[in-house]
Image 1 (cartoon, each protein chain N blue to C red):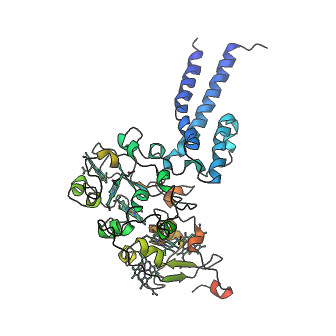
Image 2: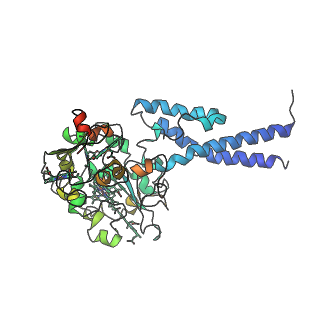
Length: 222
Length: 143
C-alpha cells in the first residue's frame, strides 16, 4: 500500500506535465505546414516520446524544431494564455498568408512584400498618401578572406527608414569611414542594430555578402 | 510468468519518471518561440502589478514604415530604452500617438498591450543573441 504512493504521485506528476504535451502536439497539427522542413520535424517529437531512452541522443540537440515557428500568441511562450487580451490578438500566420515568404526571421520577404505592393505601410502616421524619398546608392564594402563583398543598398533601406535613423548615430555618412565587422554585427551594433532584431537576421549571409570578388586583387582588402 | 507486484509498480514509476523527464526536455525550449521582433517591455509593469506590455513589430510594420515610429515619434532602437509610462501614453507620446481612438484603438484596452506572462524580462524576441546556441551574457535576455 505504502509502496503504491510514489508510483501514483509520479503518474500524476507525469500526467500534469503531459497536460502541456497536447500543446506541443497541436503546434504540429494546428497550423498548415508552411515549408517542407515543418513536416519532417513533428515526426521527431512522437519518436522521442515513444523511445524516451534515446532522447539524450536525439537528432537535433541544439537546433530548435521547425514546428515552433510563427506560433499564435496563445502558444508563443511570452504571451499569457490566461489573459483575455491574448485571445484577441492576431496570429502571425494569418497575416503572412498573402505575403512572399523567406527562410528566416518572420519568414516574410519584407522587401518583396513592399515591391509587390502586397503591403503598403504608411510613411506618415496619419497621411496614407505620403511617400518615402528613396535614394538609390549602393556602397560596396570589400571583405577580407573568402566571403563575397558586402553591398549595402540605400534603396531598400530608405523605403523603410529615414536618413536620421542611421546617420550619424550608427554610420558616419562617408564611404569607408565606418569600421564594421561581423563580431560587431552579431553583438547588435552597426548593421546588427536592426539585422538580427527586426530586419532579416544574420543567418542570411548571402543577402549582404552579395558581390562576387573580382579576383585575387580584391582579396587583399583595403 | 507472473512478476512480483511491486516490481511492476516500480517499473511503472520509472516509466512515468522517464516520461516526465522527456516532457520537461521538450517543454523547456519553449521560452523563445515568439514571433521574430516581438518586444517585451517590462521596466515598470511587473512592479505595478500589470502584465508586461508586448509590442509586435510584424503587425505594425505591415501598417507603418519604421520611420514613423523611430524618426517621427522618437522611439529609440532599444527595447525598454524609451522609459514609456502610462502618463506619457495618455498624453499622446509613444504608443499614445496612435492608440488614441483616432489612428488605432485607445488606451482603455489594457489587456491588448499588457498581454505578457508576468515576470518576462524586457527583451527582443528571436534576436541574434537569444538565438546563439551557446548563450552569451545574461542568458538571452537583453538589457
